[in-house]
Structures are given as structure tokens and as C-alpha cells.
Length: 158
Image (cartoon, rainbow, N blue to C red; front, top):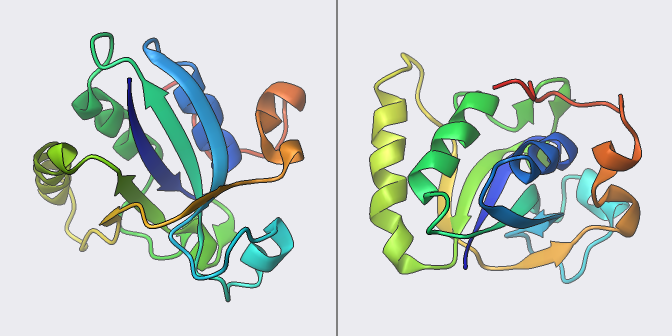
């Protein structure tokens, strides 16, 4: 099994979108690469913790590739928007790819280069090693499964 952490604005839609992809075996939403240990949603929303709302994606690499997952990721975000996606604004809604396996870096860099060629504006999506990740509160986990029709900026048909 492999894992990657993807920040694409509000984590509810990102989690639901990736949970539907064959080969993805687990997802979780939480807060990544910030400065505070085990922050609450309310603390992250202040914009002072430095965390990004992030979706953990665990996948079977023999069933789905990281390249495919990144292709899907870039279809559901606008990588030129800084600190916002959809109607959500704030540094916790920035976009990012946070990796735990150095072997994934060439794949991520290649995809980022391909994406750069598709936009006139600069790409602001972060690419960094995962430095910290804290699972969000239970009510955020599988939010759109529990609340069909809940707020979501992600087009699930892509």
C-alpha cells in the first residue's frame, strides 16, 4: 500500500471524490504541515496554525497509480488560486501535495510540470514532504457520505 496527502480546499469533497476511485482503500481528513500539535477545526480556521485541510489517500499501487491520482487531483482544483478553492478562502484552503515517500517526488514533479504548461498564471500548489498530519474531528470524516447534498466545491463527475 502507498499513501499520499492532498490538500484541495475544503477536505469534505476531496475525500469523497478520492474515496470513489477504484484502488483507493482508505481516506481520512485532517490538518497537515502546520505549527500546532493536534489542532482543532476552530483553531485551524483562525488561519494562525499554518495547517492545510488535507485528505489522506491510501491506495493499492498495483490497482491505481500515483500519476492517475494526481491527474484526478488537478481536475478538481484550480492550482493557480492561492489560499482558496470554490467559496472557501483562507490559508487552510491552499492546495498541496504532501508526500511521505521520496520515491514519489519524480512522479509529482513530472505532473506539476505538465500542469504548469496548461496555465498562463503561476501554479501555487505546494509540493512538500509531509511534516505533520492530525486527523480532523469525527464529524468531518466521511462528511458527504453522512450528509448527502452537503456543501462541496468538487465536481464529483470528473
